[in-house]
Length: 231
Image: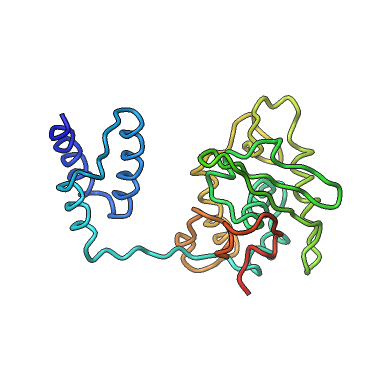
């Protein structure tokens, strides 16, 4: 059975390799390894032929490093973009940068994870795998005087109570919220849209797998908006 499974998976990845990058193949392999282990109790990491194929396919491959928005880019966007069109994107950007969140964390954030403490917001990000959580705060103003708390609060006030979604981020069109959660892929293109709005070169290079730039994410319990940028 195991040998047959490897042949099936090998054929699957061989076909996928014709149209997908090596990084995408490895991502799918990791996902399938977890699912097959859970559902069938089979460890496909022991499939040496398949692993050899994936490693050989990765030879010479160089991943394209995604571009990052600078603090000045974000400040300019928050100041110049109109709320009627971009309010939801502003809030996602503020929370994403402050907490160095990935797009999945932002998409699955619940209403109860965002606490208005008056002069600041306390954001909680649960980790479903480790059953732990981290939290960070967003202060009212940055050094340039942007009132981040009021921007988030404005979105919350617009978000109607009749929306039956528990997700914090729901679709936002023409100044109104829609009873539909914002998906991972939608949030993932926000940095590209910000770059396009600002007229930055090569906006396609801004990929929102993770917001924020520092590498201290796993070591701290609290942070603020400005911590999301390198000096």
